[in-house]
Figure 1 (cartoon, rainbow, N blue to C red):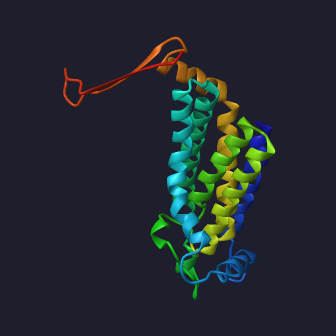
Figure 2 (cartoon, rainbow, N blue to C red):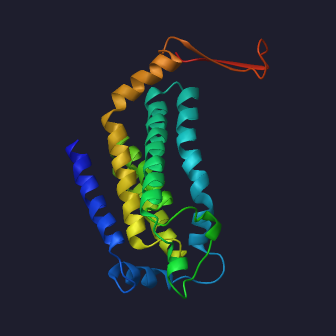
Figure 3 (cartoon, helix red, strand yellow):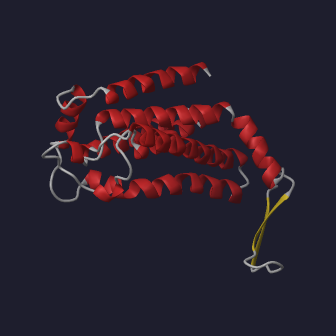
Length: 231
């Protein structure tokens, strides 16, 4: 839990910085420096933004599906821990957004270059996209701490955060706050991974059991049944 304290301490500092921000502070200057680089048309960052949210769903779902099909408990559990950490990060982000209620830069500042404004829901601090990306990247790094794994996933998460500033949707401290929340959520889930896996086994059964899934829109009827042998 000491790792969590080290992660949450900078988050508290960021919250204080956000609360005391002024239009001329470093946060805004960094925002301007990045946002002013935005070019017209659709480029790498615009494409990245369109694929980000689908990736948040596809990555953990892919691990879960592949792990189940291949009967690989490690891969399945990685997907489970990933999804759990994303849920924790999403809840934490929602609470902080409601409490801090920071105005988006495109509403607070003038002459901001804005794209993909439809993806900017809620208030500005912290960045939900960034918290989700770093939750995924952290779980993947902890589950397989090899350079060919953690270098690309951390780079991807960092680009997701940078993209939110580039598009004019978040301040740099929003992104940093999101990164801290994502990492902290993943560390918290990782700390309780054995309990989460045991809970999974209670729900789905152990490796020698069958998982039964059915769709029953009305009492006494079953339209679809799926039996998966886990051994």
